[in-house]
Amino acid sequence: MDRDWRAEFERTYAGSPSAVQERVWRQVFDDEYPEGLDPYSYVSVSELDRFVSEVRLNNDETLVDAGCGRGGPGLFVAAATRARLIGIDIAEAALAAARTRAQAMGIQAHFMLGSFESTGLDDECADAVMSVDALLFTPDKAASLRELRRILRLGGRLVLTSWDYHRQPVGRPPQVDDHRPLLATAGFETEAYDETEDWFERQQRTTELLLEACDELAAESGETEVEMRAQLEEMAATIPTISRRVFVVATAV
Ligand SMILES: C[S@@+](CC[C@H](N)C(=O)[O-])C[C@H]1O[C@@H](n2cnc3c(N)ncnc32)[C@H](O)[C@@H]1O
Image (cartoon, rainbow, N blue to C red; front, side, top):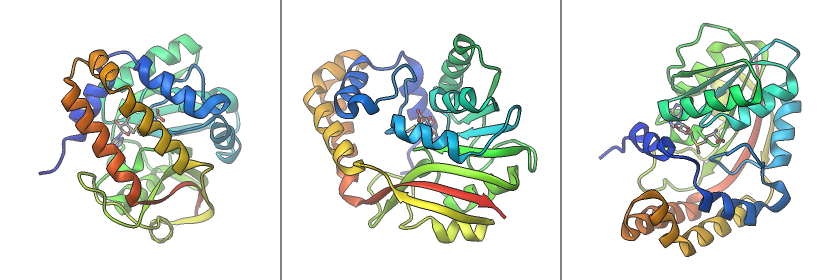
């Protein structure tokens, strides 16, 4: 049966960010942990800096963050480039947290419900699109990349992180082993397609530490330890199906 990702992410974002997860991420990422941004992803400080330079934005240009979650990464890039940010996500609870964060950071940004497949945005309204660790959740990567191309102006940049898989992970939407053919078909020229630093060690270590803290995570979320362990083991089981986590830069042509 297909999983209801919207419902799962609404639950994830319903409460405050998990203090236990934050502790684990800090332990694994050390000075590469993006302090104060509450990412729900494996984004690092160096990657965020690379997003800032690769989106190639000027003052008041429009940046769309697709699958923005609580908004931290997109707001970081918008603050650094002085771009106008539109964040879209399928989870209203994420958008509410993102709006609060934008207000606290004093940044004008618009966060709205939308998906990769159907953003709800106008043709060519974006000067750049970014996305952090979210594209894997769409069931149709080809249609999603076509939609991102539709909202980007000619010459605009798409910058994202996601994963290539050599085997379909159980319980996840259909994955691909290489996004480049899909990017080309959607109307993008791929500028960079780089395996991200230490992705395997970071994900492996994070999962190990989360499993060690299973009782604390269960207490924090209100779930039983059995439920929490099952979720973490499901997450651990996807790691051997991944061939690489990639940092992708593409231009709309
Ligand atoms: C791993 S989180 C990353 C969130 C954020 N980019 C960050 O770095 O904190 C994945 C995000 O993708 C969103 N998402 C899942 N399926 C989506 C879809 N089909 N369209 C848009 N967003 C989606 C989820 O709600 C979630 O916020």
